[in-house]
Length: 309
Image (cartoon, rainbow, N blue to C red; front, side, top):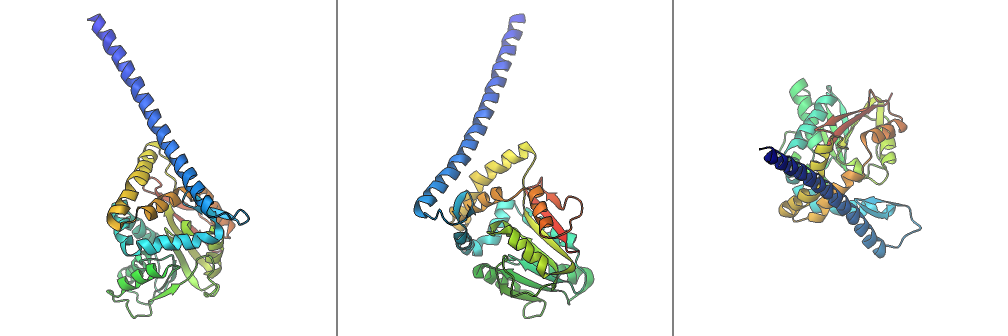
């Protein structure tokens, strides 16, 4: 009997040690995969584009000349435009809709609010904003400008609004424009500025923030819904595996485009942490309350806010 207990104890110790070694090995292999992925893509791209004299930035895990990023990002969104909403639902299991709804309810716009929705794409934020004003206030004087740099994404938004009472009304306008240069928009002209899951695709985030500050009225509010950094180690490991192993496959199945969704996953990892981004918002002139952001779903997304005072 005593011998059996010893054998059981030894078997338990061996099993525990084996599991520990396996987990460490899995973590090591995943880290190595990410490093190799970044190194290979960077090396391949560098061989094709020798532009060492130009400033460089990231395109996912690749290092590219700054003046090329806008074109590369544009091609990604041209490829995904018609499947963008379906893919968002598939990748987030519909949770992105809850995040956007929370953004509108946190904004709590009043009657007559003027919203500039930058990188507005297919119109989720713009539509939610107008619906909120109508349902909560019975208001039809609120107005939104849906601005996007990609004409194909903007066209999807226009088609969506064709099926609503807002079509051909003065409540919504569409504009092709670059978040880094809103020179077509006068200073101090909007009450709220929103950008949802778009700012990480911009080359110069600081320019986007300064333009947002300029076009807002005194007292206006900047709101940015963007992916964040997950702090819980267990959730983070599951999220990483899902992001790098599953999402590109979903992109291939639904949109026949694995590479574009691989970029979108990589771009999330390149975006600053919640703390770093909040500091950038303050450096642009905004006043923040508290931390300046709210984590959503374990920090997978974060809602940032600042005021022009």
